[in-house]
Length: 264
Ligand SMILES: NC(=O)C1=CN([C@@H]2O[C@H](COP(=O)(O)OP(=O)(O)OC[C@H]3O[C@@H](n4cnc5c(N)ncnc54)[C@H](O)[C@@H]3O)[C@@H](O)[C@H]2O)C=CC1
Ligand SMILES: O=C(O)[C@@H]1CCC=N1
Image (tube, rainbow, N blue to C red; front, side):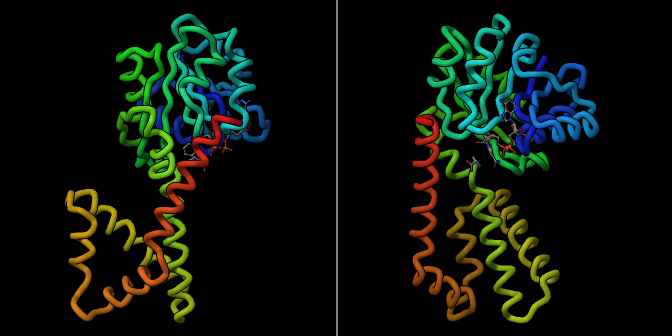
């Protein structure tokens, strides 16, 4: 039995992904305290919604998809209820394996995972790391579950805050760029619909090319940049406004915030 604790955006993405990849709905439980949301999950997926303590009593694998700020209370609620041998997978930003182990009690195997919202469309990128009591088989099991919503890599825990800043928060950076580009097109007189289409397809095309070519982004950018042309003029402005440094600082700020979240 798998229990997803927290049926919000990420919990739903995991639930939908697991169902879409053939998991038996009868083998999935959801905990969601917000009544209307619980009803939505019941109606859409036929989910069985139970309180967290009940989920802990029944599940062999628990996926914790609640906010970091709510995590300690939840861990203290489920600690005494866990089935022997149960694996606890947390996707909460900043929550370390040692914090999970401290509140769950001695010997509990835990996995810290960081997916991202493209999981909603099966194109997620997740990094995972195991705790001190977690076996290779348990890490394999967590990886297999998370593969239901996209790709998975394993990293040492010291990189998890950086992962959170790069791929966890990363989709937001691209939406921010998309929003900015669309507004620029509108400001120059284009319809919002056409600007949206041009920008969306440009970003997905560029991402596909980056992914499939295996080339360094500099090589791909140079291929777009004709001598004395439009792209060179644009890139010069981006550099003049310090966009490179702004991105580096933004990603460091996200990394630092992830570190802070374990401290409450
Ligand atoms: N949104 C994102 O891009 C990503 C979020 N995460 C992490 O995933 C976790 C969930 O994030 P979202 O799904 O975006 O949040 P969300 O706010 O959409 O979902 C959280 C859900 O948990 C429920 N909840 C609150 N307290 C609970 C409790 N005690 N037991 C069970 N459920 C409870 C809420 O009612 C809500 O439906 C967070 O820890 C976040 O750091 C990880 C990767 C990406
Ligand atoms: O913003 C956040 O805290 C979460 C974690 C990664 C993406 N969203």
